[in-house]
Length: 257
Image: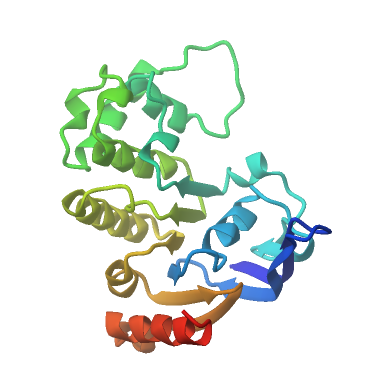
């Protein structure tokens, strides 16, 4: 279980631009739960992901994984348990390396460095099987540099690579936002398939309200560092896009927009 307890986060603290994003915010996510997170810009969605991954520090509060306090754990150590896919497909792969080299790099995540070759030729059939599951024909292009692939192909690879090693949490940071609608659908289907097969606890930030409604078993809507909607189970299953839009409109009116 992932537990976020009474966290506080300020930006530009002590200046005239000081902003309090989180003030005593708490959230618990059960094991193997797929949570979709929506909200307007500045609502705290991406900051929440960065706090979980250790990319930005907390001012106060605690984060627990499986009952262990990881608040002070550095980002690189958390990455052994967390896989992350970013909005920009270029951030999850190395463009100047081949598909094979990228797969080998992901395969060795968290392992000690040594003087052995970076690519284990005996693992190539395994890499081909994984790439074949994407249905994009990448298993036949192992020597092609990843930088020459389309954005959708790179994002599919980034999703696959982030889950190659044993992880407990998958963090999806608007991972379909930079893709065309058809490719985004493919990536979402792959996401759902991988999450179910590996039984991963998943947090997906998205601006696509349909994806938020159709995928996952829990939906959280953020506004000014608070969860204004938090539904799961049957309540989540009965939720419609219009319900979320109504809440967005309500908030917009309250804010004078």
